[in-house]
Length: 320
Image (cartoon, rainbow, N blue to C red; front, top):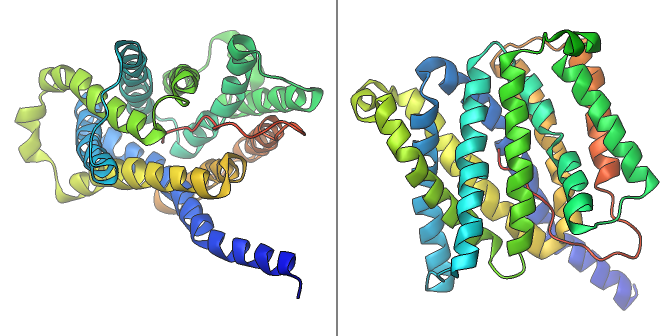
């Protein structure tokens, strides 16, 4: 066996743990739609749940960063301003829209398919604001994804969108897409100077601080004693598996096998979201969800295919 062949096998073997972790990360992120749906309907406290999620996640992530670096690097004033915007959009805005959307009759599976279009809108924003290249195949992928999202949002009746019949749940989840697009484009400007995990840790802590007064007004202190064990398990799932472990494992994958290969696993998030919603929440698997989901999946894949001879860049990562 040649040395090159042996090296290739060794490299593949060493990457296997990363692939397993990335597969589980996609599963954890898909499961956040189920946990979020149950919490949103059981508690009806979007600010309180969002605060608790990121209060727990922020503490754990900050400790993780401190243990790894043996310090907590302080951002510059300019970096802090960008991190504040990340906290407002990716933490507070996204998660309030996420939980408010799931409070409605919008199925969790359908919500996961709408959120799955985030990379497409990030690609559009990157082309507009960062002059990133869009070839014909990527443009075709964008159009496919938008068509798929239209089928999913309209529940198979696109003309209803022009008659003002789009549901409030769908509008909130579209808010998630908007907030995460802004979050990702802002994060792109900081990735070269600030560690991605440090960005997530700081934005979680600041986001929790921003959400705290709203959670208090909503009745956080009064309601805590009424939370069931299952409610705390679901909040813990969102904080620890959906945020802490998900992001740590994802960024380990980006570091070890590259952003392009690691980014492919994001495509499995809506798949797991649909599977878990059908199995756990007993949601209906409709033809419009299947058809729209296929269009979204193919479109996102085409949009995120690397352009030949262009080096990998850190992908925009949807936080679920």
